[in-house]
Amino acid sequence: MFNLILFGPPGSGKGTQSDLLVSKYGLVHLSTGNLLRSEIADKTPLGIEAKNFMDKGQLVPDEVVIGMIDNCLELHKDAGGFLFDGFPRTANQAKALDKLLELKRTAIHSVLALEVTEEELVKRLLERGKTSGRSDDTNEAVIRNRFAVYQNETAPVAEHYKAQHKFKAIPGEGTVADISAALGEQIDKVLERQRKEQEAF
Ligand code: AP5
Image (cartoon, rainbow, N blue to C red):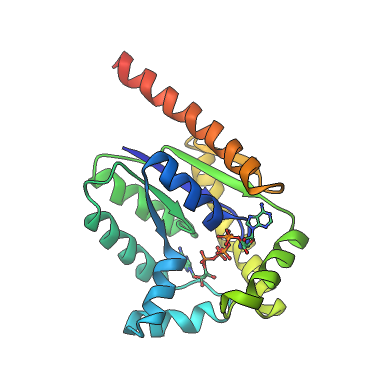
């Protein structure tokens, strides 16, 4: 099994790059943002609760998203691996993910963080807000709040994975194809290392 986290601030390209990587590496894409938006579209009780947080650019409570991820891991128990996009976003979520994967006798193998300047991020999100219908993209104050939440609660999660020697920053500006190639190069290195370790074992 191969499990990857695509990490980075709002608008850094996690969703765009995930779509390319899941087909290339045969992974199941688990985006908590997409899962929550689908709950909102279906007007489920979870979706109605989540919308209040998302519209303000705040995080949905940990227990809600951890429960969603737990269900998805169970649903795809025969998967060859997972690409986590937008999760974990807090220290509690990172610890919970470690435990959930440990129960399945696996772990996170690599965390790739897309680095993009704030000015470029705002530009991308305001542009996307014109057509996406995402309520958290149309208002610059909400976008700035999402960045503040990212700095305060999510960026520190990097330390959890740096301590495990699994974290690698990747420049997130340039063409989608070039960024995808840089991510692929790093993933191939990790897979090669994993293959050698398995051979030695
Ligand atoms: P979520 O859906 O995860 O959104 P996000 O992290 O804010 O990220 P985005 O989807 O905005 O951006 P992205 O990095 O995927 O970039 P994308 O590829 O789309 O979360 C939304 C909300 O849900 C949160 O605020 C929170 O409320 C809640 N939530 C989700 N997960 C949670 C969790 N774990 N815990 C608690 N709450 C949670 O690209 C952005 C734009 O840029 C696109 O238009 C794209 O076309 C463009 N673009 C991409 N790459 C490039 C490039 N190289 N050059 C130019 N443009 C580019």
